[in-house]
Length: 345
Image (tube, rainbow, N blue to C red; front, side, top):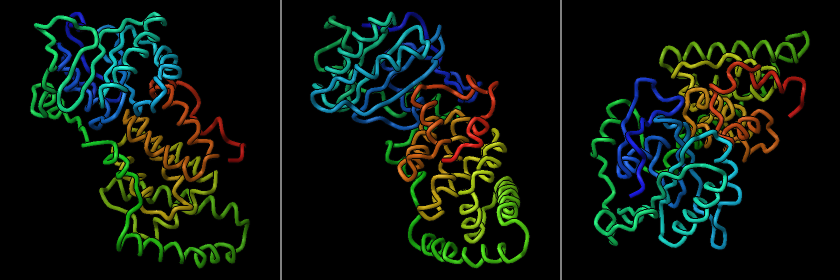
């Protein structure tokens, strides 16, 4: 059976540094994968890279459509991550998974990468593409480890979370509905009155709105740091002001590692009316990326770009996420927002 030599420590950048999960077998690798991604994958190809005994990155993509093996664009991307060895896991029906495991594995090997595992997970069982020994790899496969396996239990004990599926993750950035949506719509409709007061107060409207925006950002931070939320009118006001570049840049520059910032910008993203979503969604993506929450950053950036494909800050994050670059790799550089100042979205 194609297994790594010795144990691997499944510790990803952004995870709690004290969270170390020892992976000794292919079954352990399957069990820990949902915790590396943040959700249980389905119809997916997952690539996990290691440097020494440490997991250096984990990426997931939908199974390629019929007629496509996925290796053409996936292999160069994986090869750029600097991993010493690779494990490829395919979740889904046998034919598309086996085809992609074979072609992607071959393409990665040509890039000089060591392929340690190629595993297919189908219908609650798993098979190795690199094992021909009936004794250890029976034709009927092996049962997938249960959610209460030692590896999964260790991940949960150390604070890691694996949502049921990617749709559950996407729901964390989806718009609120029901009474909350009605109240948010009403608060947004009243924005004209509030903007009118600013314009009638005298002075340069742009300067006044920038000052109001910075004040609203700080107020939101204080509220969420205290474990509370903005009111619906306050949310609508901040959401509208974030559409201005100086206010958005100000909010970006203030994001650091506090966990409540994820809650702050997730709530904003879910509450504001559709035209105002890209700003908070991009800020949520940035906060999640800095926290090492790649899956959450991915769905937040995707939502921002669906609504505003030209949002330059979201596009920068999109590129970093697509390349598998963690914030540690760029933290010594100028803040991403500074590189975009002076350019229009």
